[in-house]
Every structure is written in C-alpha cells, then in structure tokens.
Amino acid sequence: MKILMINHFPLAGSGSGTYTRNLAVHLSQLGHEVCIILPENTDAYEEVEGIRLHPVFFTPGEDVEKQENETMGDSMDNALPFNFPCFTTHPRSINNFANLSEKQLKMYTGAFSRAIDQEIESFKPDIIHGQHVWILPALAAGKGIPLVLTAHGTDLMGFDKWPQFRDYANKAMDDCFAVISISKDNCALIEERFPKHKDKIVMMRNGYDPSIFYMEDTDVDALMKAHGLNKEDYEGKKIVTFAGKLTNFKGVDVLLDAIKLYEDKKPETVTLIVGNGEEWDALHKQAKDLALKSVHFFGNVPQSELRKVYNISDVNLVPSRREPFGLVAIEAMACGAPVIATDQGGLPDFVNEEVGGLVPVEDAQALADKILDVLTRKEGEEREKWCKDIALYARNHYAQDTIIKELDDLYKRALNKK
Image 1 (cartoon, rainbow, N blue to C red):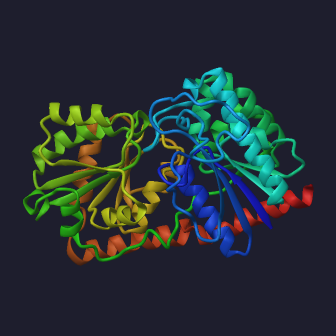
Image 2: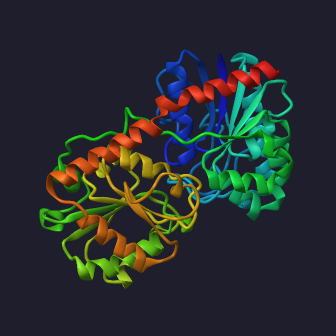
C-alpha cells in the first residue's frame, strides 16, 4: 500500500511531527511505502530511512521580499518568504496561522496544493492521511483518494480561536473516511465541533517509538556537563524534569510556582526544563523573580538526548492546562520515569497512582505535594522494580509496533469502501 501523509509541522519539535514519523517508520516496517509532505525552513533537515519526504520550504526569521513564482516553496532558494505557521509555537517558528496575511495564506495553500498534486501524480498513493483537522487535508479532499485524518487537539483549539479557518476543517471532515481520536477527551471535543460526523470517529491510542525511548544506563555527569551544570548542582539530589513546548497551555508557569514550594521543603532537588517556545523569556524572568535556586533550562534537545534526560529522572511532570494526549508522558514512562500529570485532556487515560499520579490544573500546591510524595514513595530495590514496571506498562500498551496494525486495518477498510 502507498500512503501519503501530510503534516503542518516538521517531524521534529512537535507532537504531531513525532506521531507522523513514528507511524511512517512502523508502516514501512509492515511493507508499505510512505511519503510525507511537510514544511521545512532549512535544507539540513533529517532524512528518515525508507521514507520519502517532500518538504515545502519556508524562510526562518523575519519576512523577506521575494518575487512570487510558480515554484515558490520547492527549495530553500524559492522558500516562501515567511516562517511556517503553528497553532501555538514550535522550536523553529513562533509564527501562527492567524498572523498569515491574505497573500501569505494564498502562497501557503498554493505551495502545498502543488506538492499534493505532484505526489498524487508521481507517488500515486492509495491512501492520504492528513494530520490535524485543518488546512492541508482540505487541500487533499476531493482527489478521489480515501482520506483519513488524525485530530491532534491543537487543531481543535485553532478551530475555536480562529473561525476564519473553519471552512477548511469542515471540508476535510466532509471528505474523510474516518477521523482518528487519540484520547477520550479528544473524542468528545471532535463530537462537539463536528456532530454530523461523529460516526467517523475512531479511537486509537497514541504510540511511542520503542527503538528511541527505553531504559538504559546514562552517564549523568556527561549529560549535565553538556548543559553547563557542575557536580554540586545535582550530585546527591533528586532530579525532577519537564519536557515540552514552552507555551501557555503546557502550564510551565504553574510548575515554577510549585518548584518554589517544594524547594523550601526539599532543597536536595534539581529541576530540568527541556524545550523551547514563545514563553522562554517570560519563564526565565519568572524563575528569577521567584529566586529559584535549582532550575535549569536545557532548551530543545534531540530525542536521543531526551531519552537520557528521562532515564535520570526521579519524576517527570506534565502540568498542562489541557493536553490532547500527552505523548511525552508515555515516552518518559518507557524510560522508567514516574509521571505526574494534570487531570484534564487525554492524560487521565493512562496516568494514575500506579505510575505516578494526577493533580488538578492550575494548582501549584497540589503539584508540589504530589512531587514530594512521588520522590519519597519508594526507595532502593523497591523503587527500581517500580520504575521497571512503569516501563513495562508503557511497552505493553503504548509501543507503536503494537498499535500500528490497528491503523493498517483502518486503511484497508477505507480502501474497501472506495
């Protein structure tokens, strides 16, 4: 089977990018051919072995004057004269869809329409799988090829915030065979926004790549030194971690308030914040204003390094105000890290007291208390066994290679209905 995937973001730096890459790799392992159309703002992007990539190029940084032409976007020399738009933020772009001028939106849709038409002609896909109920899958609608969507949650936030884009979302939903929901909460949100299409919703849990995230012995000193930490910054201390985009809905500001509370009660802790985004400066200022003693911002790191961060974690935090699924929590658990998350969105589907615990949204005190609880809940061999059990739970229920057959079956049903 030939599968054409379309994503609004690069394969690194976003949840949907990681999701798309994971699916593509595991579909390829089943013997399928996969092509991914995606935005890029560098020609030094990472290739994925066995996967055909078709980047549409954008210009990083400030807008520049370029003469529009029919091949705009097909190379860095002909890159669209603005950065790729996001729902919230991305490590390589803080542009968002609402910022697009009428001319830029026309250039954006034109470049991706050409890319889609080119791949329909040359790759000849049997199935098109659009990531997000949003603009790009709408451009693939009406092509006579079965369309499957995945609603990632941020698209539904965009649907609420920006009514000017709803026609695209509705067109994609009208044409699709099915829309994949990644959590129970996400399913309810899809039903509310597209009630006439509720019969198209297919629940399919998100999966992580077990070849990237797993338990391993990690050189703590080397990892910390690479980020400018001295031994006295972390030696003999419990390690608390967060990984994700630094944007409002991730709740990192609440985490910083919680750190102030637990630092006073348990000074032998160090907190590592991994990621980047639009709130980088504001969060640094908040940490300074709170006079936090042991918080370190690592910035964005590759997944191979993120695995090391999870492996040294005594607890990993997902304090989101609303998380459509929370793949980072699964990835951390796969590395044996207990997880504390908020009780909203998709996180309660798989986070509980057996693997860490849940806390209310916006409650810094509850978060601080739960962190102290998890840090001291088990010790020694009992703690080691607990971490191994957490990793096994993730592996048995959320590894992508155990879930991919469900997607393969969905594609086959879509083809049979064609």
